[in-house]
Length: 193
Image 1: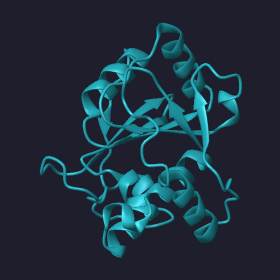
Image 2: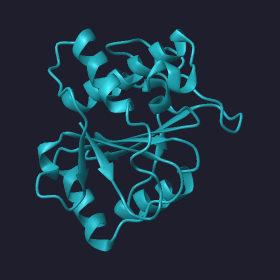
Image 3: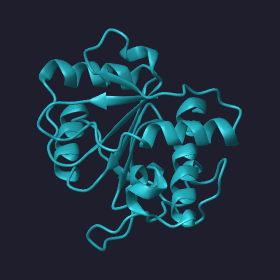
């Protein structure tokens, strides 16, 4: 899993404890061997395809170049997976750029019955609400290519903030646990489907 760097002014680097904490949780609760440190990658980096899961988060703007749009689409169509977390204020720019990446596909809402909410941790009501932003319900969206989920986007939920060190947001343990479990479900899904 690598954090995706992007241009446009948004803070792609925010939440530096998010990925290390999620990876540690995955190591402790599954049989998946993860790295201990966070990798960071640019869409145009030579080793992009070495990472089966890309994590995109931040606040504000995202802007992909035309070459980045084409390369990200190639990555996703050839086995890669994008896990996007709206850390408040990312929604408009993310939807615009993923729309440029897949102009022929739509972000569709994933219902609570979708498999990503079932294993290894059950979420019968779908995406958990981790942080309050605009008092909207949490939503999970996806883009499918040839029947395979290639993009998972959580909106009005902010899973990433729940992965941070406990002192960062002072989340109650049950919120952090839900965020880490849901993040694990997404990674397990990405690696097995």
